[in-house]
Image (tube, rainbow, N blue to C red; front, side, top):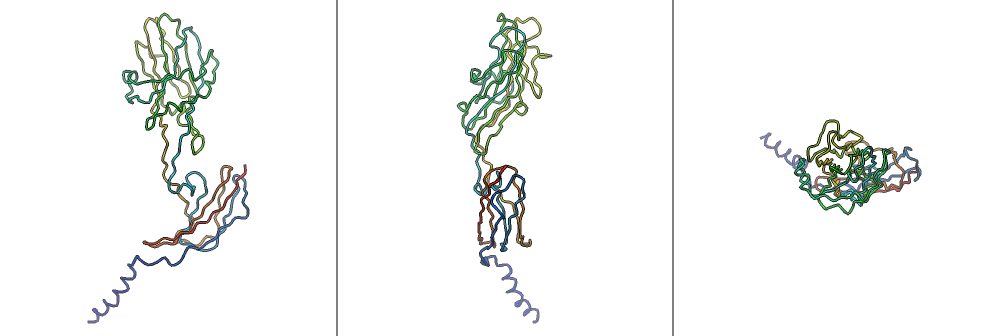
Length: 302
């Protein structure tokens, strides 16, 4: 009998403790301030708090930690700019080097698949070397070649035509594809990560001739008797030129429910600019959340 009464005494306590529908006890209340609104790069900023929300988070305004992108961030590529440097030595044959771009290459890296793709010749958008001194190509705008949902493939094509003169030796350095994006200037591909590879058409000698190093692409004709048409196709990997969804920016947690109330939080900025700083205070149960947002505008000088 005593056991029966004990059971009924315990039951209400268990039910109450498992109830997740309890209201949030109070709105989160806090204040935040700084000693001033202008700081230097690298200078420590003390954010001072009053109040005690259950959870407190921080958005600095830096990329990846910006309150304005808490719902998601898409990096838009506004343009495509390509540049490189080139030099040429020896021989007399003209028009051996060309720069090509494709959006429909199959990605099968063999000479038949490469030649089967449609290639746009953009050589005339660049300034090519006329001597052994490396010359900047200039910066060519190739935004018009972009096709939605398609990567770009680049080719440095070298052709030896019998009877057109002795073959020349071309060298290319500093391949660089950049874009002015909504997130600032970004390098989409360079000489190293473009992953260029060499493929040949015709009886091409490969030992000691055309080559790729970490810094230089060298294109040259056969060393033996030049009696056949040969083509060197130096082709890049697929280079993504589409807008990129980076997902939402995330805040930095300053305080959780089980942690003591902070009186201050220190932070410094690595780059100059004007930053909208946000702090969010949250009180929550399983079924209800209340949020209070505070903001401070800071100027960071060099």
